[in-house]
Image (cartoon, rainbow, N blue to C red; front, top):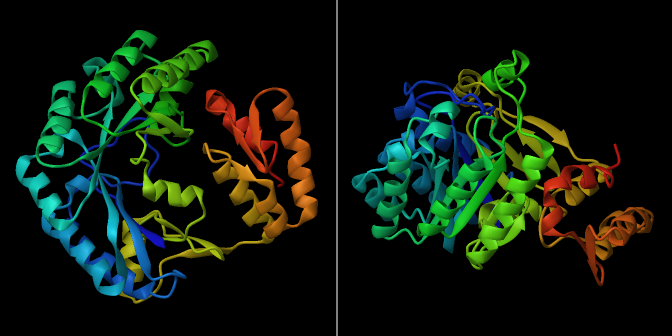
Amino acid sequence: MSGIYIHVPYCKSKCDYCDYYSVVTSQGREKFANLVEKELILRQGYLPDSEIETIYFGGGTPSMLGSVQISDIISGIAKRYSVSSNPEITLEANPDDISEEFLKNLRSFGVTKLSLGVQSFSDIDLKKLGRRHNAKQAIKAVSLAHTLGFDNISVDLMYGLPYSSTRIWEENLIQAFALPVKHLSAYHLVYEEGTPLILKLAKGLVVPVSEDQSVEQFQLLQEISSMNGFIHYEVSNLGRDGFFSRHNTSYWKQVPYLGLGPSAHSYNGISRDSNPKSIIEWQKSIKNGAIPTEQEVLTPQDKLNDYLVTSLRTMWGANVDTIAQNFGDGNAKQFLHTAEKYVRLGIIEQRDSVFRILPKHFITSDGIISDFIAV
């Protein structure tokens, strides 16, 4: 089984906090599907398995693509790969792009999951984040999608916002779980290099939340989500049983995937490949019949680090027997030496050969995982 990711770079505006590659234009959208299909042809043979289990439209703003473009991309994949009889096909969308006609078209094309970039149900938060929609539009988008047959709806929310409060975060969570959603992605705000937000930070125009506030908001996330039957299965992802993101879970379990579009990444177990962060360079390569990627062949140490970074982010954890089998007894012993320290501290739980960070400690997972990584 493999997955395919399509990076749709178009945005109507750029949010202050976002460091994903995007272009604030709609020009060229009508040619995008054709270019993706050409890249698909160029990259045939990259994946070790021709059966596709998941397709994911990310961005950027995939909902800015026309319905015909989305349909053409899905059809192009189906022509060249064997798509599973029960695929997960996800499309990210902004609430203000949602309409009844658009949703009906998505359903007819086989899109099974809608991921809505809500970020907050507070109009004050949304305005300061630079989002175009308001809370009313977000609620309406979720309700309309559910009414039209989308059973698998995910929403993105952000916490740790410098101009918000823990009370507003709690209200956001209560509102989210009052809606017919089956999945939640919750991200703590990060001040990314090269974004307008980090410039505001440097000028003293925003003040980061305290560590205590971050912890308090994270604990609220866990408490309220658990009360509503959601499982915290990965650092930033929670869902009802049976509604975990199959596409993202494949990343964390080292399943090969092919990335199409500018700035998209690919992985096939042998190498990591990255497309240029420029729609112009990407288009130029495709039109010239050249594969538009930079390739990094993975060393055994790279593969071990990848396994540790991805597995320890999840509730499934890392298996020391897998490490011994795939990376040798020496690496397994080193893993055990580090893991045992965290087991004694009650941060990591051991069940037979599996070691996992307890979800209540996910908030400090980056620091914990870095202890396991050899550079």
